[in-house]
Amino acid sequence: MTAQIIDGKTISKKIQAEIGTAAGQFFDATGVKPKLAAVLVGDDPASQVYVRNKERACERANIESELFRLPSSATTDEVVGLVQKLNEDSQVHGILVQLPLPDQVDALQVLDTVDPKKDVDAFHPENVGLLSQGRPRFLPCTPFGIIHLLANSGIETSGKNVCIVGRSDIVGKPMALMLAQRDSELGSQYANATVSLCHSRTKDLVAYTKMADILIAAIGKPEFIKAEHIKPGAVVIDVGINRTDDGLVGDVDFDSAAEVASRITPVPGGVGPMTVTILLDNTLKAARLQQ
Ligand SMILES: Nc1nc(=O)c2c([nH]1)NC[C@@H]1CN(c3ccc(C(=O)N[C@@H](CCC(=O)O)C(=O)O)cc3)C=[N+]21
Image 1 (cartoon, rainbow, N blue to C red):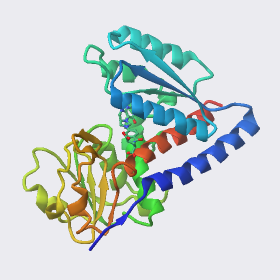
Image 2: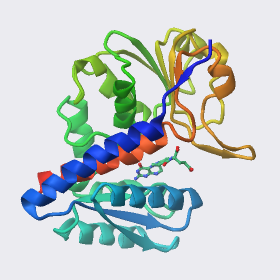
Image 3: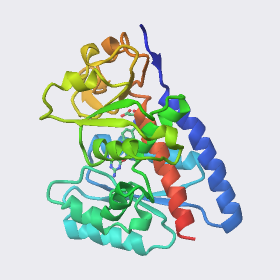
């Protein structure tokens, strides 16, 4: 078997065009152009790439964006102060604090400062709580991007075995919540999964991954998932972005996995562009919330 590719770049272009149309209509009705403020502390090269991708995508979708930079020596108080200023700025609808922050900055304190109604990453405890109760305000960008990828590819999750490898607060944990719930913004067929959330202490990982109709790799280890982890015909979603000597690779060994899977996302061009797309959607949602 050779897997069909799930093309995140093409799907994200299509959704970004829809968001652009909706943002234009919102502007015509209200005179307000949705605005995203991105906070970038230091000069991590990967963060610069992501922030640039986000700015370009905003431009395409009729969303204003402004980048606020602080030096890598910034203190917690300085970052918190900038976020407070953006909270109070009525022209700013969405605030994104690019992670990772430098070690001397208390990231939790910074993220807790973001006004929950401007929290387009959905990292604030109020938004995490709303999601866990099944009444989300904003949905976290990468997990919701994955649901969109599945929906756009006609891959339903209801009643399926989904295995998520990796329990991070920004991908694995919220992804598990969203897929296990009764409903999703895209319909109940894209929820209601039987979810296993696996991690570094999981015993017999292969037993879980091999049961999965949909396998989501969000571990942060280059090419960790191989053909032997995958049930023949399964759908494989690769969330990893690892920079190695061979260039950018995912958490899945693409060549061997594609022999066994029925559908697979590439890296780059899979989940990454969808993360950016949902950020735009959340910024428009934030602008609506603030009218
Ligand atoms: N507050 C916060 N929110 C985030 O959403 C957030 C963050 N911090 N810190 C880092 C991670 C990572 N992330 C990506 C965004 C875009 C691509 C992306 O555009 N990827 C393209 C290009 C990849 C490349 O060329 O490097 C692709 O996969 O095709 C990837 C990863 C958002 N993150």
